[in-house]
Image (cartoon, helix red, strand yellow):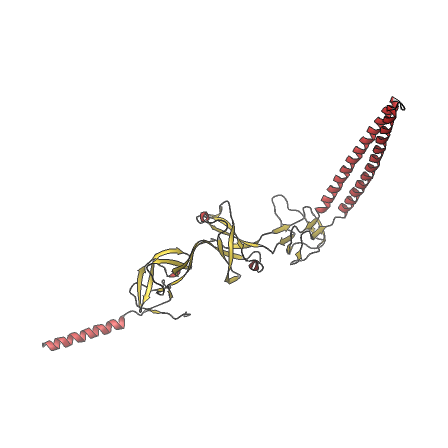
Length: 381
């Protein structure tokens, strides 16, 4: 066979092989990318279970005695001031006892006043007889009788005053019994719930068996978040650390907060899930005005923060210190030195440059070192 024929056949086979390779080569993987940028990276710890927005003051109030509801002057949703009457049981009998005790106290006071006036008169009379006795104008018997009379009257005055104190104690006891039939607001707040109606009977909780309160009162001027964190994160958390708060009710917003308290003990309610409760204050007064007690909440406690550093989305990081860099239609796996990290961002100390594009869809099939790739348009499903 001639050399030219061999060359022609070789070229033909090479072309066919190239055509087969081109026809069977894998399609470029579609990826999403993000640019390496400069920003702030925070090291945070988060709650293990959903936290709860709580009112700084909340009281479940019930009468300390049983009886029939006679007055219910408030309604649910009403704002009340401290000392406002919330509920009163039928207490005509106790009111009568207070009146009787008041009358006894008044009588005792009047008797004490009369006894003490007589004691003062006897004291002055004894003094007059004593002066006359010194001038030999009164007998020893007259002086002795006058002084004895003065002492007796003084003792009667003292006994009368003691009786006044006893009557006053009885009056206080009667008033205390009457007060047990009334519920007064212990602080300014909103009546969140009323359990009971006029003429219904209420009974105090039996020992060891709690019953729902008659009035649920909430102070809506102050709220905080209580959330559990894992026990392994607790040593790094202390009062004063800044916190990012997110609420399911305000999905697109982030609220600023600060750690107010870390619990002094570990909860072990769930098997193999020991947590420490952390309380977080809202730092902006305007935020507190929009809250409701009971909202679910999540917290991110900032343990450290680095500003103006290179960062990549944490979702782009594989094997803790690698990313896939998109370069002219090809993916290149590259190692970098990470710094601080959280769920959103990872700090880049070395290994990447600002502006380079890293793959954020690392879990897609076909993403590997050397793979051909095309960037998926933003917003593409």
